Image (cartoon, rainbow, N blue to C red; front, side, top):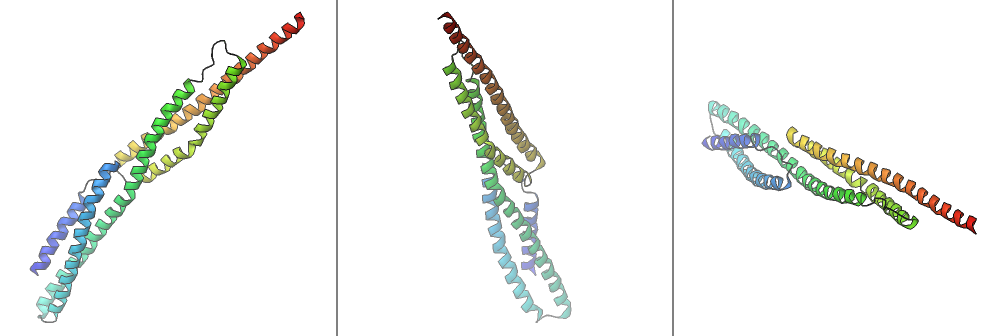
Length: 231
């Protein structure tokens, strides 16, 4: 019975550790540490579960050699430790599963978010470089039009990457705290808003270049007409 009491103390302490453990992080490095530590905790718990089963087997043998009053006490102890072991192992397995699910999601979200942030900065600079040159000619405007269309295609090509970020973020939000979920939402909203902005900006830039192209071709046409009239 003393062995059962010792195991029950261990299981009670283990349950308290799980219930008071730090919330699931969304930072990949922190998550990696949480997963490593809980795996070690879970392995130790599984080893103790074997000790519980061995103790239950020994106690069952004792039951055949005890009086009715002693047998009832042992049976109650066995029910208690069996139920507590089941509960703690279940809680530990659930936390381990969440950590194992969260780590790759957090890593992927972090990498994708960093890549998109960098790319958005580059694409904004690229759009800024598409200004219409002063005293531009047809060839210069046509070149800028081609560059703008290429930039627009690149922006469209990044749409699946943004959708991937959104989906990964929402999956991670289901596993973390409300505070961390809000931070993830803000990161997602910032990227999607920036994407909408660069899409709108490149459309406007193309309109300006189209107008400029019509203007310079009209000027060229007027110049040619003027030369023909002089001949």
